[in-house]
Image (cartoon, rainbow, N blue to C red; front, side, top):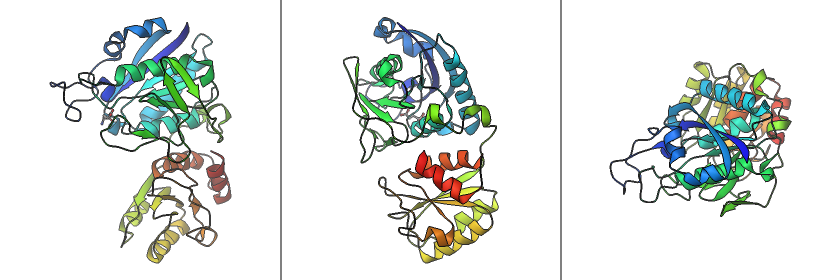
Length: 329
Ligand code: GLU
């Protein structure tokens, strides 16, 4: 059997409620990792599991500091010959962000799998045990090697670059818009149907050993009659980069082009993403990026574009290089 380390960070998978019919009114991040694992007896038959209670958080309270420590811990575990894979339990609210961050900084081909649950452990239909079982299956599988950080919930396998939470409460919430999930885990067997194309994990130029801290990058949500006050406030508060969750193909009003153009001239990198939820933001498509010196986010959603921009800024301030990074990762 493979040796798998489970790092627990909290979330609903560690949640409890006084009522078995509560699906949203419960306390997250209560059960310890040992409590969770001891409730899933089949785990013993599929891997040798060791566990660490890394933090105990509602994932809304995830921070860059925890990310950096988590990535360092995962990297050092995976360097050990006897460790075959790592599973991270996580609240679903920011799971996609932690997964993509780790996908960009953990330099290893070994499997890293993020998993959560939408129902607390006390629920009539709690999904945590099966999700965690599937995550350990994936972390133990040779098929998971070299595919970057994976996400699994609800029997599906997703690429951390594209997966996103799409429903506030349903179990079928993690989706990979347009390009589709990697595959499924059914009856303890992973079924993969595609490979990631973009650079990740063992191909990274941002290995965690090189990252000391992450620069401030904020997201500004586009809407009708945007006055630009929040973008200006973010720049004044020291943002090194801004991601604009633009309209359609990263579009914005004439007024916002002028506001963000001025902010760009002050040295803040401006990335155009979209609030639409899927699709490519094309360079010089809805906005003349060459004229305004903006970056197009490709198909990264705003929260993932923020992570890539932070990591890019640890290495370069060149617009050409940052745009190239957005086409590569
Ligand atoms: N809001 C909690 C969190 O993100 C629970 C969400 C979940 O795990 O489904 O940790």
